[in-house]
Image (cartoon, rainbow, N blue to C red; front, side):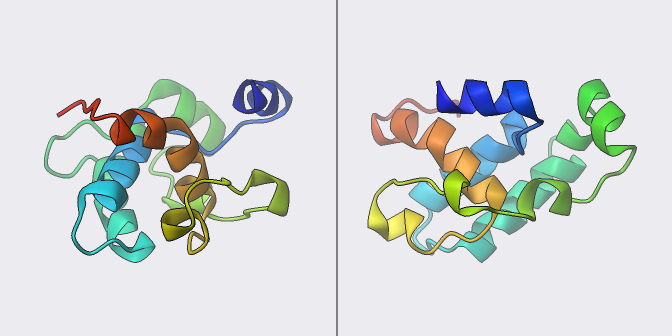
Length: 116
């Protein structure tokens, strides 16, 4: 409910494919680092390998403009946005994208529910 309420007050930094790519990378990679996972997320954001750029979404474009940088999702983390998840992840995360992606996707990924 917290995410829903936040989204009703102001836009939250959540782009589905980009956030999923980040969370999947962070939880599945042998090199669990926010920096590495942000590189994977950036590739999805700009439409790298699969060509479906989250930043090209009509609503993202209306909100952030065409060709918005990934920074529109990463910058400006506040203390009340921090994800209280497992310390192995949550304690080291510094970007808004990281905290929102993990809040949404980590429970499903932990249960083995994976989109691909």
